[in-house]
Image 1 (cartoon, rainbow, N blue to C red):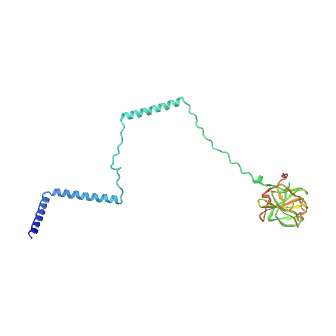
Image 2: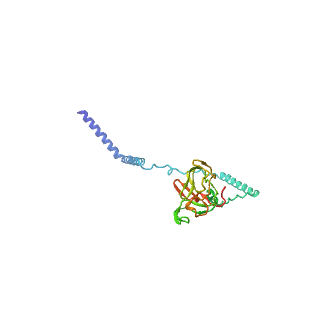
Length: 259
């Protein structure tokens, strides 16, 4: 019990001494409190900046220090620039600079694309077309005295004229048609097929025979009953697959073109 009273008296004494110190030196106490407050505020601001704000940069606080050239350095630099300028002037006086050539634009026009006429096949016989291709329209047959389609072209040529193959291929058929007379069917290597009709009897080819371009495969005759009223001619048809096509799209028809 006596020990407890002794501790209580000691604490009261310490408390009294502290209060007396604060009363006597309250200016120091306020200064310490102020410093602690400023430190706490600075700590909070620094923490907020590092959590999400932009970190303070040092550029704003740093002094832009430039080395100021001395007068001697400036004089040396000026002398060098002056000497260089004088050297350029002297070179221009003593030398003649060659003019830089100006490139002229190219006004040459691209060559016109040639007509595909030169790429067309040569006609089997020499002569003009007297009857053209007519599948979507009708032509009047003088022999039959009626309007009808015409799946080929009729090329005027004297009777007995040689009939030549348009392209390489093989003879598919040799037969006599009821309307177009003696006919030869030639299948070409590119898959197209040409039919030569109104030929003379007994053409000099047979089925399965290999034919080269411009080989003679027959002679112009007068065996086409449906066209016997017209002048002597070769009836020519051209097929792509199973469909007839206009021979004039693939063949050039003009006189004297037999090779």
